[in-house]
Length: 155
Image 1 (cartoon, rainbow, N blue to C red):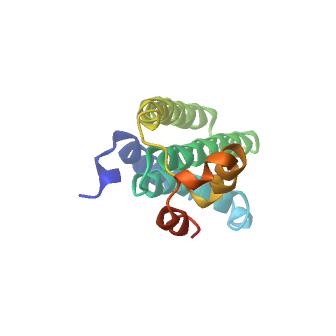
Image 2: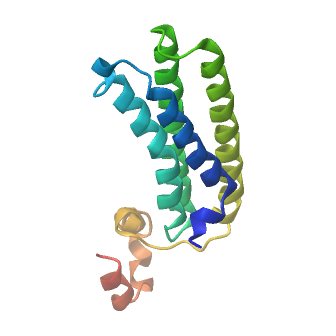
């Protein structure tokens, strides 16, 4: 079993994708490449981002992908509301789907809080992105870094 498959939030998001696909089957044909496609892509993006984040090496990276999943969930909620306003979704179906999205969102927030605790415990590593900041801030102490460490972090 892959790491993301053990996550309840990923399982709920996967189930929700099926719900979304079934709900959008009855949308007008002219929306196939419009709103229907947008809704389906946003729905798929939620579990896909969770899975991608779970495969990353650090909690910080995982948090980034959870944030992407939260953004997709918010996008999806707006698109479902538009579909409801256009009469493509019954109001009761919209509210049921929104409740599920809210639950997924709360789970994602909980995961973020949990992961943020571990980020604070992770050792600081030099990356290409923060390399120049370190050189600027610690310019006089630059010699503390070994030549091999500097070379490995230029990638």
